[in-house]
Structure formats: C-alpha cells, structure tokens
Image 1 (cartoon, rainbow, N blue to C red):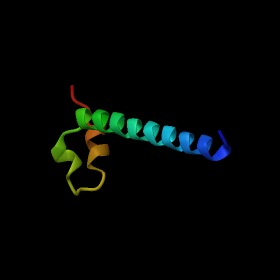
Image 2: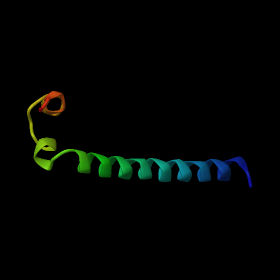
Image 3: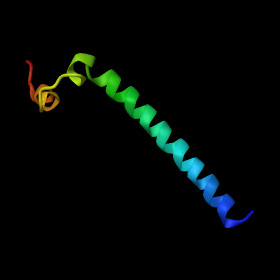
Length: 55
C-alpha cells in the first residue's frame, strides 16, 4: 500500500466519522427543541427560551 491509498482510507474514515457526528447532532437537536422553534425567524428565540425560569 502506498501513501495515496492510506490517505484515501483516512479520508473515507473521516467522512464516515463526520457523517455519524452530524446524525448524532441531528437527533440530539431534534429531541431537545420543538420544530416550530427551530424554524422560527426570530433571532435569539432559542436563547431566550433557555433562559426562562419556571417555578
């Protein structure tokens, strides 16, 4: 195996890792926030909703 094959396998491994991280992040965000909140156009609405304190 030459250096180019090793670099190709490393690139595929990094691509798979980044894809898995994106999928994990998608699932985490989707379960944390409501879809209406994520598609809203108000700036800072997520930060404001996270700062609200309920007793």
